[in-house]
Picture: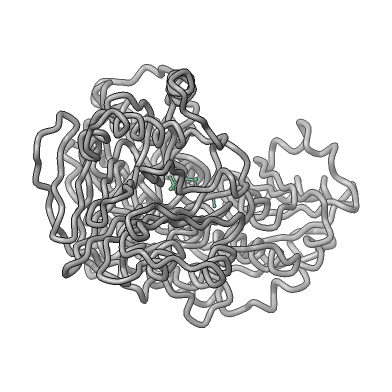
Length: 606
Ligand code: F6R
């Protein structure tokens, strides 16, 4: 969480710092701030709330320094008020930080005993005083940071500037990502390459444990042992156009509409569409011999994994164990010999998912990750990477990353099934053909916004909403409820339809809309029975199905007519209406769709 930037520029950097921070607002937006070296001294401006508040502050009280750092915050320690906003500083040093300093209490106690006065509730301030303390003892800035890094415990990315040093910035990375941008006579620092896209696409990613000394002439990188190291300079493709809202009102809506295209790209890299066969990359393991698949992820990515469990068990007849990463990392789950562990993550930086990956790796599993950010830590620590080609996802609520994850996982399920001979070549052709048709069906679904108006009318007045689904539709019901609650703030829960009578039915009355995800598959009749139970208690039913509305056998408060598709691909298509229902409801209510309260795009803390 939190976004950090730094610029060693040829002229005043404050405008460019703010421009870079705008691209990082998806990582947090409680408060923002910048600090620069002004005629040898450090100066800063900070503001509570969105970045525009900082911009307003800078208009009336500008900064002119050519060396600066900036930060957009997602609060971990201390309330989101100006006093706790980054950069934090003493007269000698200023720091921006992403992550958590775990031993800040001990550091603070030691430093206070030495006479340092703390002004904030943050963990970051301990780092500032630690470095200041070394500077007070006569160390130069590089030695002072090197010494401080020996004492800090936790996961962090740091950007640091110093009073009296106009041509110096120090960066450090442990756990949280950090990119260095190379300009001509200028150098940049950012939480990711997207932040730096307007200035440079020549990027070096720091490895875990690295720290770097930036000057306008270039960068020197050192590993955790202090040895000078070379890291590759790459050309990043995060072009500025990719992160533009275009003609859409929100990033989320743009990203929903991008799905046919990004799904096409993603499927194209895992399927031999010409021959209707799966063309999966070698995972470095014999898929016929794996004994079990273990899947772990968080939030929406976990629901993609849950769909994959149904697919792999059904088509490949292979047992799949799945758990949310925050549980699995501490469950000490026994893992089988010859097991494949699959991790799903848009950002590739989610702390719990990464910790679970490391547990599975240490316990002998072959690690494959389905990630959207190829340069991410999860990707780099995996034996095999299965990229989703969703492009940058800026809306905090995940949409296109989810359906791209499903596309990759569907390919994986078919690949395992083929290797294990649990499907015939004809069945493989049928499944691959069904996947190939998904982008077209999606595109047609995206052109009927009018279908959602009466539904969002019902939902926007509700206090609680239930989502029901069976089989492959159960994870979609869970995802529907998550989407609605995170952007509209309406309380929503997803249930396996068969669980209704074991408790949730008590909630149903005429004020509770119930959204039923029910393709006309072999489980449809069962779900229709649950639907009757809801109708009998006055619940307002909204049916998403390819079946004619009459087949529900009761009055519907809303109905989304879906195309008829093979059961395998239903989750990909049924994701679209549940995304649009959440989006239009949130717009009608008037919430901040792209930056819902309390959330952040990349969850790098536990
Ligand atoms: C919900 C959402 C989150 C993420 C979760 C995992 O819309 O976006 O639930 O899915 O935080 O993030 P990644 O996929 O980056 O590991």
